[in-house]
Figure 1 (cartoon, rainbow over the protein chains, first blue to last red):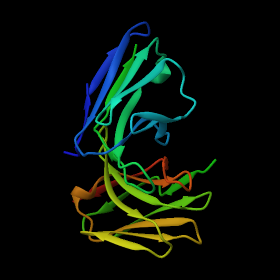
Figure 2: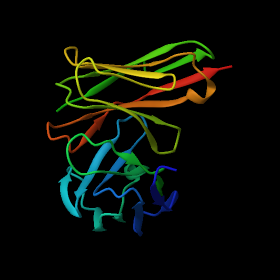
Figure 3: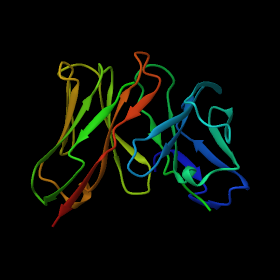
Figure 4: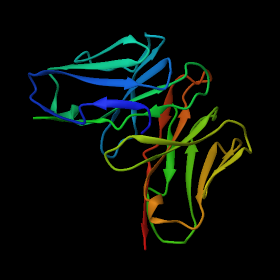
Length: 113
Length: 112
């Protein structure tokens, strides 16, 4: 139990569907992150939120749309995804500021048909 | 852009043996983090190193940071089956320490 909960754990969707991934942290952190983990590749940082404000977008395609309504919740809205978007999507949280370790959820395994 | 290279990519050790995993950065290291991941699950934070020469231990796992070599090592003493998993190193991608980059990971198997 890391204090970061992601739902759903598994998601299968067609390329024309719209779905959302949810992340909730119970650690009192104020920074939240989305990562993508594909086979044989390093973890890729997608988005960073500090105090609900997006501070980093790592050239992520617009078919991925993040939302951070408060410091405890983070969403990733998905629409018209491509097969290459199939991956493990990980959410993390930390205290905002320098050199703070990030704590990860168990991820959502996404498969695009 | 900065890259982290981990070696070896994978290893199999007999239970009770010691092992070392290395993480080398292509640029200056400001902060170095070690994580463990079980397949298909999230990352578990192990340790953070910030200063050259720093060494930290947790149970049978020791990590060191060699700032001059831009390298960190993770050493496991007397490995156990519970140590099996994927070990990833992460580093601050900027001096502000607000974003991490990761290596590809080292897969460790421990045979009993």
